[in-house]
Amino acid sequence: MAVDLTPRQRDVVRLLSLGCTVREAALILGLAPSTVDNVKTAAMERLGTNKLALVTRLAIKHRVTSMKDQLTRTEKRKSGRRNDGWN
Image (cartoon, rainbow, N blue to C red):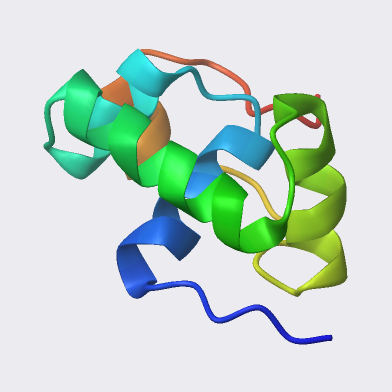
């Protein structure tokens, strides 16, 4: 079953699956946290879950991210993170 996420939804789901908070994803994407939260909610609805814990599993299943995916240096710098969610 393929899930049709918008490019913005894919970006948000990827960042959340890498362990970013809504605030960190907003900093990386240059958006307001409320916008990221709205996009997250819409993406989760399309993924068929209301549980944030399942987002990573579904993101891998639908190839939005992979087990080898990591935050880029720029994403780490913008978010203030030193490591991504897989570390």
